Amino acid sequence: MTSPLNHHDSHPPARTHKITLIPGDGIGPEVTDATVAMLETAGRAHGCSFEWHRQDAGADAFKKTGEYIPKALYDSLETNRVGLKGPVTTPIGGGFASINVTLRKKFELFANFRPIRNLAGLHSRYPGVDLIIVRENTEDLYAGLEVMVQPGVAMGMKVITEKASTRVAKFAFEYAAKHNRKRIHSIHKANIMKLTDGLFLDSARKVAAGFPQVEYLEHIIDNTCMQLVLNPYQYDIILTENLYGDILSDLCSAFVGGLGMVPGANLGENCAVFEAVHGSAPDIAGKDMANPTALLRSAILMLEHLDEFATAETVQSALDKVYTEGTVLTRDVGGKSGTKAFTDAVIAAM
Ligand code: NAI
Ligand code: MG
Image (cartoon, rainbow, N blue to C red; front, side, top):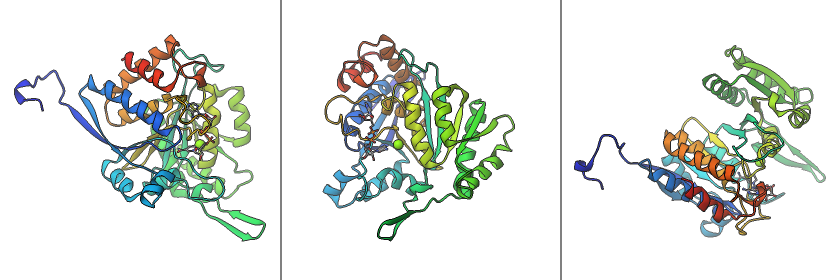
Protein backbone atom coordinates (compact mmCIF):
# COMPACT_ATOMS: atom_id res chain seq x y z
CA MET A 1 0.00 0.00 0.00
CA THR A 2 1.31 3.47 -0.83
CA SER A 3 1.85 5.67 2.20
CA PRO A 4 -0.12 8.92 2.19
CA LEU A 5 3.27 10.61 2.46
CA ASN A 6 4.25 9.23 -0.93
CA HIS A 7 1.15 10.57 -2.51
CA HIS A 8 1.85 13.08 -5.22
CA ASP A 9 -0.94 15.08 -6.78
CA SER A 10 0.24 14.52 -10.33
CA HIS A 11 -0.33 10.75 -9.92
CA PRO A 12 -3.98 9.78 -9.92
CA PRO A 13 -4.82 7.31 -7.14
CA ALA A 14 -4.63 3.62 -8.06
CA ARG A 15 -7.94 2.18 -9.21
CA THR A 16 -8.89 -1.51 -9.09
CA HIS A 17 -11.76 -2.81 -11.19
CA LYS A 18 -13.59 -5.99 -10.27
CA ILE A 19 -14.40 -7.85 -13.46
CA THR A 20 -16.30 -11.10 -13.93
CA LEU A 21 -14.09 -13.09 -16.29
CA ILE A 22 -15.71 -15.92 -18.25
CA PRO A 23 -12.94 -17.62 -20.27
CA GLY A 24 -15.45 -19.96 -21.97
CA ASP A 25 -14.17 -22.92 -23.99
CA GLY A 26 -12.56 -23.73 -27.38
CA ILE A 27 -10.22 -20.81 -28.13
CA GLY A 28 -11.87 -18.88 -25.26
CA PRO A 29 -9.23 -19.57 -22.59
CA GLU A 30 -6.38 -18.78 -25.04
CA VAL A 31 -7.75 -15.40 -26.13
CA THR A 32 -8.84 -14.51 -22.59
CA ASP A 33 -5.41 -15.28 -21.08
CA ALA A 34 -3.82 -13.19 -23.82
CA THR A 35 -6.22 -10.29 -23.26
CA VAL A 36 -5.77 -10.34 -19.48
CA ALA A 37 -1.98 -10.23 -19.88
CA MET A 38 -2.17 -7.28 -22.30
CA LEU A 39 -4.60 -5.34 -20.07
CA GLU A 40 -2.52 -5.88 -16.93
CA THR A 41 0.56 -4.44 -18.62
CA ALA A 42 -1.29 -1.52 -20.17
CA GLY A 43 -3.08 -0.66 -16.93
CA ARG A 44 0.08 -0.68 -14.80
CA ALA A 45 1.41 2.49 -16.41
CA HIS A 46 -1.78 4.37 -15.55
CA GLY A 47 -2.61 3.24 -12.00
CA CYS A 48 -5.33 0.95 -13.29
CA SER A 49 -5.51 -2.65 -12.09
CA PHE A 50 -8.00 -5.50 -12.20
CA GLU A 51 -9.42 -8.10 -9.86
CA TRP A 52 -10.52 -10.92 -12.16
CA HIS A 53 -13.34 -13.08 -10.84
CA ARG A 54 -13.05 -16.21 -13.00
CA GLN A 55 -16.25 -18.12 -13.69
CA ASP A 56 -16.94 -21.29 -15.68
CA ALA A 57 -19.90 -21.57 -18.04
CA GLY A 58 -21.27 -24.21 -20.40
CA ALA A 59 -20.23 -27.86 -20.60
CA ASP A 60 -17.14 -27.33 -18.39
CA ALA A 61 -19.23 -25.72 -15.66
CA PHE A 62 -21.76 -28.56 -15.89
CA LYS A 63 -19.02 -31.16 -15.27
CA LYS A 64 -17.87 -29.32 -12.14
CA THR A 65 -21.12 -27.99 -10.66
CA GLY A 66 -24.06 -29.70 -12.37
CA GLU A 67 -25.17 -26.33 -13.78
CA TYR A 68 -24.48 -24.77 -17.17
CA ILE A 69 -24.51 -21.30 -15.66
CA PRO A 70 -23.49 -21.73 -12.00
CA LYS A 71 -25.10 -19.52 -9.38
CA ALA A 72 -21.62 -18.14 -8.60
CA LEU A 73 -21.46 -16.68 -12.12
CA TYR A 74 -24.85 -14.97 -11.75
CA ASP A 75 -23.85 -13.61 -8.32
CA SER A 76 -20.50 -12.37 -9.60
CA LEU A 77 -22.05 -10.47 -12.53
CA GLU A 78 -24.82 -9.17 -10.30
CA THR A 79 -22.19 -7.66 -7.99
CA ASN A 80 -19.53 -6.51 -10.48
CA ARG A 81 -21.89 -5.44 -13.28
CA VAL A 82 -19.01 -5.69 -15.77
CA GLY A 83 -17.95 -8.89 -17.50
CA LEU A 84 -15.31 -9.92 -20.04
CA LYS A 85 -16.34 -13.09 -21.79
CA GLY A 86 -14.80 -15.64 -24.12
CA PRO A 87 -16.99 -17.78 -26.42
CA VAL A 88 -18.93 -20.75 -25.12
CA THR A 89 -19.75 -23.74 -27.36
CA THR A 90 -23.48 -24.30 -27.88
CA PRO A 91 -24.55 -27.81 -28.95
CA ILE A 92 -26.26 -28.04 -32.34
CA GLY A 93 -29.76 -29.50 -32.48
CA GLY A 94 -30.37 -30.79 -28.95
CA GLY A 95 -28.51 -30.13 -25.69
CA PHE A 96 -28.53 -27.09 -23.45
CA ALA A 97 -29.72 -23.58 -24.39
CA SER A 98 -27.10 -21.05 -25.45
CA ILE A 99 -25.22 -19.60 -22.45
CA ASN A 100 -24.77 -16.35 -24.36
CA VAL A 101 -28.45 -15.91 -25.12
CA THR A 102 -29.41 -16.87 -21.54
CA LEU A 103 -27.02 -14.31 -20.00
CA ARG A 104 -28.15 -11.55 -22.38
CA LYS A 105 -31.80 -12.18 -21.45
CA LYS A 106 -31.19 -12.60 -17.70
CA PHE A 107 -29.21 -9.35 -17.32
CA GLU A 108 -31.32 -7.51 -19.91
CA LEU A 109 -28.27 -6.74 -22.04
CA PHE A 110 -30.59 -5.42 -24.69
CA ALA A 111 -28.16 -3.79 -27.11
CA ASN A 112 -25.36 -5.66 -28.82
CA PHE A 113 -22.89 -3.04 -30.03
CA ARG A 114 -20.44 -4.17 -32.71
CA PRO A 115 -18.12 -1.63 -34.34
CA ILE A 116 -16.59 -2.82 -37.63
CA ARG A 117 -13.39 -0.88 -38.28
CA ASN A 118 -10.19 -1.59 -40.15
CA LEU A 119 -7.05 -1.52 -38.04
CA ALA A 120 -4.35 0.78 -39.31
CA GLY A 121 -1.78 -1.26 -41.15
CA LEU A 122 -3.82 -4.35 -42.00
CA HIS A 123 -4.47 -4.72 -45.73
CA SER A 124 -8.13 -5.08 -46.67
CA ARG A 125 -10.04 -5.16 -49.96
CA TYR A 126 -12.34 -2.71 -48.17
CA PRO A 127 -10.05 -0.09 -46.60
CA GLY A 128 -11.47 2.51 -44.25
CA VAL A 129 -14.70 0.70 -43.33
CA ASP A 130 -16.27 2.27 -40.24
CA LEU A 131 -19.73 0.95 -39.54
CA ILE A 132 -21.54 -0.12 -36.40
CA ILE A 133 -24.05 -2.90 -35.98
CA VAL A 134 -26.59 -2.41 -33.20
CA ARG A 135 -28.35 -5.73 -32.74
CA GLU A 136 -31.41 -6.32 -30.57
CA ASN A 137 -30.19 -8.86 -28.09
CA THR A 138 -33.07 -10.36 -26.10
CA GLU A 139 -35.86 -11.64 -28.34
CA ASP A 140 -36.74 -12.53 -31.97
CA LEU A 141 -36.34 -16.21 -32.91
CA TYR A 142 -33.76 -16.39 -30.09
CA ALA A 143 -36.58 -16.44 -27.55
CA GLY A 144 -36.16 -20.22 -27.79
CA LEU A 145 -39.89 -20.93 -28.13
CA GLU A 146 -39.93 -24.05 -30.24
CA VAL A 147 -42.37 -26.93 -30.26
CA MET A 148 -42.74 -30.20 -32.10
CA VAL A 149 -46.34 -29.77 -33.29
CA GLN A 150 -46.51 -33.38 -34.48
CA PRO A 151 -43.90 -35.81 -35.79
CA GLY A 152 -42.33 -34.20 -38.84
CA VAL A 153 -43.58 -30.69 -38.05
CA ALA A 154 -41.55 -28.30 -35.85
CA MET A 155 -42.53 -24.73 -35.09
CA GLY A 156 -40.53 -21.81 -33.74
CA MET A 157 -41.95 -18.53 -32.53
CA LYS A 158 -40.54 -15.18 -33.47
CA VAL A 159 -41.23 -12.72 -30.67
CA ILE A 160 -40.89 -8.99 -31.31
CA THR A 161 -42.07 -6.49 -28.71
CA GLU A 162 -42.54 -2.75 -28.94
CA LYS A 163 -40.65 -2.37 -25.66
CA ALA A 164 -37.45 -4.17 -26.77
CA SER A 165 -37.56 -2.68 -30.28
CA THR A 166 -37.96 0.84 -28.90
CA ARG A 167 -35.18 0.58 -26.34
CA VAL A 168 -32.64 -0.77 -28.83
CA ALA A 169 -33.64 1.90 -31.37
CA LYS A 170 -33.28 4.55 -28.66
CA PHE A 171 -29.82 3.24 -27.88
CA ALA A 172 -28.79 3.47 -31.56
CA PHE A 173 -30.14 6.99 -32.05
CA GLU A 174 -28.75 8.31 -28.77
CA TYR A 175 -25.37 6.83 -29.68
CA ALA A 176 -25.54 8.40 -33.15
CA ALA A 177 -26.47 11.82 -31.75
CA LYS A 178 -23.74 11.72 -29.11
CA HIS A 179 -20.98 10.50 -31.44
CA ASN A 180 -21.99 12.51 -34.46
CA ARG A 181 -22.89 9.55 -36.68
CA LYS A 182 -24.88 10.54 -39.72
CA ARG A 183 -27.20 7.72 -40.71
CA ILE A 184 -29.13 4.75 -39.36
CA HIS A 185 -30.52 1.94 -41.50
CA SER A 186 -33.13 -0.38 -40.03
CA ILE A 187 -32.66 -3.81 -41.60
CA HIS A 188 -35.78 -5.96 -41.82
CA LYS A 189 -37.97 -8.36 -43.80
CA ALA A 190 -41.30 -6.62 -43.09
CA ASN A 191 -42.55 -7.35 -46.61
CA ILE A 192 -42.92 -10.98 -45.51
CA MET A 193 -43.03 -10.76 -41.70
CA LYS A 194 -45.55 -7.96 -41.67
CA LEU A 195 -46.49 -8.10 -37.99
CA THR A 196 -43.17 -8.88 -36.29
CA ASP A 197 -40.73 -6.95 -38.48
CA GLY A 198 -43.51 -4.42 -39.04
CA LEU A 199 -43.61 -3.73 -35.30
CA PHE A 200 -39.82 -3.43 -35.20
CA LEU A 201 -39.93 -0.83 -37.99
CA ASP A 202 -42.84 1.09 -36.42
CA SER A 203 -40.94 1.33 -33.15
CA ALA A 204 -37.74 2.48 -34.89
CA ARG A 205 -39.63 5.11 -36.92
CA LYS A 206 -41.17 6.58 -33.77
CA VAL A 207 -37.75 6.90 -32.15
CA ALA A 208 -36.24 8.28 -35.38
CA ALA A 209 -38.78 11.11 -35.38
CA GLY A 210 -37.13 12.48 -32.24
CA PHE A 211 -33.69 12.68 -33.92
CA PRO A 212 -34.06 14.82 -37.05
CA GLN A 213 -30.28 15.32 -37.19
CA VAL A 214 -29.77 11.60 -37.92
CA GLU A 215 -30.84 10.38 -41.35
CA TYR A 216 -33.14 7.35 -41.10
CA LEU A 217 -33.45 4.70 -43.83
CA GLU A 218 -34.77 1.15 -44.19
CA HIS A 219 -33.37 -1.74 -46.23
CA ILE A 220 -34.61 -5.29 -46.65
CA ILE A 221 -32.21 -7.92 -45.32
CA ASP A 222 -31.47 -9.87 -48.53
CA ASN A 223 -30.80 -6.73 -50.55
CA THR A 224 -28.65 -5.49 -47.64
CA CYS A 225 -26.32 -8.49 -48.02
CA MET A 226 -25.67 -7.55 -51.63
CA GLN A 227 -25.42 -3.83 -50.89
CA LEU A 228 -22.88 -4.50 -48.16
CA VAL A 229 -20.59 -6.55 -50.40
CA LEU A 230 -20.88 -4.02 -53.26
CA ASN A 231 -20.46 -0.92 -51.13
CA PRO A 232 -20.28 -1.14 -47.34
CA TYR A 233 -19.45 2.59 -47.16
CA GLN A 234 -23.11 3.52 -47.68
CA TYR A 235 -23.89 2.24 -44.17
CA ASP A 236 -23.05 4.09 -40.97
CA ILE A 237 -25.12 2.43 -38.24
CA ILE A 238 -27.12 -0.73 -38.90
CA LEU A 239 -30.02 -1.22 -36.50
CA THR A 240 -31.56 -4.66 -36.63
CA GLU A 241 -33.18 -7.64 -34.95
CA ASN A 242 -31.37 -10.45 -33.22
CA LEU A 243 -31.03 -13.03 -36.03
CA TYR A 244 -30.30 -10.57 -38.85
CA GLY A 245 -27.74 -8.85 -36.60
CA ASP A 246 -26.03 -12.16 -35.90
CA ILE A 247 -25.67 -12.98 -39.60
CA LEU A 248 -24.71 -9.48 -40.73
CA SER A 249 -22.02 -9.29 -38.03
CA ASP A 250 -20.13 -12.25 -39.46
CA LEU A 251 -20.56 -10.92 -43.00
CA CYS A 252 -19.25 -7.48 -42.03
CA SER A 253 -16.30 -8.93 -40.11
CA ALA A 254 -14.89 -9.98 -43.50
CA PHE A 255 -14.41 -6.30 -44.45
CA VAL A 256 -11.86 -5.83 -41.68
CA GLY A 257 -9.95 -9.13 -41.67
CA GLY A 258 -12.49 -11.64 -40.35
CA LEU A 259 -13.88 -12.82 -37.05
CA GLY A 260 -10.52 -12.53 -35.32
CA MET A 261 -10.87 -8.75 -35.56
CA VAL A 262 -14.37 -7.70 -34.50
CA PRO A 263 -15.26 -6.74 -30.92
CA GLY A 264 -18.62 -6.50 -29.23
CA ALA A 265 -20.39 -5.21 -26.14
CA ASN A 266 -23.64 -6.48 -24.66
CA LEU A 267 -25.10 -3.45 -22.95
CA GLY A 268 -27.96 -3.08 -20.47
CA GLU A 269 -29.09 -0.42 -18.00
CA ASN A 270 -27.07 -1.84 -15.10
CA CYS A 271 -24.68 -4.36 -16.56
CA ALA A 272 -22.31 -4.78 -19.50
CA VAL A 273 -20.62 -7.89 -20.84
CA PHE A 274 -17.85 -7.46 -23.39
CA GLU A 275 -17.23 -10.29 -25.85
CA ALA A 276 -15.98 -10.78 -29.39
CA VAL A 277 -18.35 -11.61 -32.24
CA HIS A 278 -16.64 -14.94 -32.94
CA GLY A 279 -17.44 -18.32 -31.42
CA SER A 280 -15.28 -21.01 -29.83
CA ALA A 281 -13.58 -21.94 -33.13
CA PRO A 282 -13.16 -25.67 -32.39
CA ASP A 283 -11.16 -26.08 -35.63
CA ILE A 284 -8.20 -24.14 -34.20
CA ALA A 285 -8.72 -24.52 -30.43
CA GLY A 286 -5.68 -25.43 -28.34
CA LYS A 287 -3.29 -24.92 -31.27
CA ASP A 288 -1.93 -21.45 -30.40
CA MET A 289 -3.56 -20.18 -33.60
CA ALA A 290 -6.39 -17.95 -32.37
CA ASN A 291 -6.26 -14.22 -32.92
CA PRO A 292 -6.94 -12.44 -29.60
CA THR A 293 -7.46 -9.06 -31.32
CA ALA A 294 -11.28 -9.33 -31.31
CA LEU A 295 -11.42 -9.92 -27.56
CA LEU A 296 -8.73 -7.31 -26.94
CA ARG A 297 -10.76 -4.74 -28.88
CA SER A 298 -13.80 -5.78 -26.80
CA ALA A 299 -11.64 -5.09 -23.75
CA ILE A 300 -10.87 -1.61 -25.13
CA LEU A 301 -14.63 -0.98 -25.20
CA MET A 302 -14.71 -2.22 -21.59
CA LEU A 303 -11.92 0.17 -20.56
CA GLU A 304 -13.84 3.06 -22.10
CA HIS A 305 -16.97 1.92 -20.24
CA LEU A 306 -14.86 2.04 -17.04
CA ASP A 307 -13.56 5.55 -17.91
CA GLU A 308 -10.03 4.15 -18.24
CA PHE A 309 -9.29 6.09 -21.42
CA ALA A 310 -5.50 6.29 -20.96
CA THR A 311 -5.20 2.51 -20.63
CA ALA A 312 -7.53 2.03 -23.61
CA GLU A 313 -5.31 4.35 -25.64
CA THR A 314 -2.16 2.43 -24.66
CA VAL A 315 -3.73 -0.85 -25.83
CA GLN A 316 -5.02 0.68 -29.06
CA SER A 317 -1.71 2.24 -30.04
CA ALA A 318 0.22 -0.97 -29.27
CA LEU A 319 -2.23 -2.85 -31.48
CA ASP A 320 -1.86 -0.28 -34.27
CA LYS A 321 1.92 -0.52 -34.01
CA VAL A 322 2.01 -4.34 -34.25
CA TYR A 323 -0.40 -4.38 -37.22
CA THR A 324 1.48 -1.58 -38.99
CA GLU A 325 4.82 -3.37 -38.58
CA GLY A 326 3.05 -6.53 -39.73
CA THR A 327 5.86 -8.93 -38.80
CA VAL A 328 4.13 -10.72 -35.90
CA LEU A 329 0.55 -11.44 -36.93
CA THR A 330 -1.65 -14.52 -36.59
CA ARG A 331 -2.50 -16.75 -39.56
CA ASP A 332 -6.12 -15.62 -39.99
CA VAL A 333 -4.84 -12.19 -41.06
CA GLY A 334 -2.01 -13.47 -43.23
CA GLY A 335 0.75 -13.79 -40.63
CA LYS A 336 2.79 -16.77 -39.46
CA SER A 337 2.81 -16.24 -35.68
CA GLY A 338 0.92 -17.88 -32.86
CA THR A 339 -1.39 -16.38 -30.22
CA LYS A 340 1.42 -16.19 -27.67
CA ALA A 341 4.00 -14.55 -29.94
CA PHE A 342 1.41 -11.98 -31.06
CA THR A 343 0.48 -11.25 -27.44
CA ASP A 344 4.15 -10.77 -26.50
CA ALA A 345 4.59 -8.40 -29.46
CA VAL A 346 1.61 -6.25 -28.36
CA ILE A 347 2.93 -6.15 -24.80
CA ALA A 348 6.41 -5.20 -26.06
CA ALA A 349 4.83 -2.41 -28.13
CA MET A 350 3.40 -0.81 -24.98
P1 NAI B 1 -16.67 -19.47 -34.96
O1 NAI B 1 -16.80 -18.01 -34.85
O2 NAI B 1 -16.25 -20.18 -33.73
O3 NAI B 1 -15.65 -19.84 -36.15
C1 NAI B 1 -15.86 -19.51 -37.50
C2 NAI B 1 -14.53 -19.49 -38.27
O4 NAI B 1 -13.77 -18.34 -37.86
C3 NAI B 1 -13.66 -20.69 -37.96
O5 NAI B 1 -12.96 -21.07 -39.12
C4 NAI B 1 -12.69 -20.18 -36.92
O6 NAI B 1 -11.45 -20.84 -36.90
C5 NAI B 1 -12.52 -18.72 -37.32
N1 NAI B 1 -12.25 -17.87 -36.14
C6 NAI B 1 -13.16 -17.48 -35.21
N2 NAI B 1 -12.57 -16.75 -34.28
C7 NAI B 1 -11.27 -16.67 -34.59
C8 NAI B 1 -10.14 -16.04 -33.99
N3 NAI B 1 -10.25 -15.33 -32.85
N4 NAI B 1 -8.94 -16.16 -34.58
C9 NAI B 1 -8.82 -16.84 -35.72
N5 NAI B 1 -9.84 -17.46 -36.35
C10 NAI B 1 -11.05 -17.37 -35.79
O7 NAI B 1 -18.09 -20.00 -35.46
P2 NAI B 1 -18.67 -21.50 -35.52
O8 NAI B 1 -17.62 -22.45 -35.93
O9 NAI B 1 -19.89 -21.36 -36.31
O10 NAI B 1 -19.12 -21.82 -34.02
C11 NAI B 1 -18.38 -22.60 -33.11
C12 NAI B 1 -19.09 -22.63 -31.74
O11 NAI B 1 -19.08 -21.33 -31.14
C13 NAI B 1 -20.56 -23.05 -31.81
O12 NAI B 1 -20.80 -23.92 -30.72
C14 NAI B 1 -21.31 -21.76 -31.58
O13 NAI B 1 -22.55 -21.96 -30.98
C15 NAI B 1 -20.38 -21.02 -30.64
N6 NAI B 1 -20.53 -19.56 -30.66
C16 NAI B 1 -20.44 -18.91 -29.48
C17 NAI B 1 -20.49 -17.54 -29.44
C18 NAI B 1 -20.34 -16.88 -28.11
O14 NAI B 1 -20.00 -17.50 -27.13
N7 NAI B 1 -20.58 -15.59 -28.01
C19 NAI B 1 -20.68 -16.74 -30.64
C20 NAI B 1 -20.71 -17.51 -31.87
C21 NAI B 1 -20.65 -18.86 -31.86
MG1 MG C 1 -22.81 -14.93 -34.17
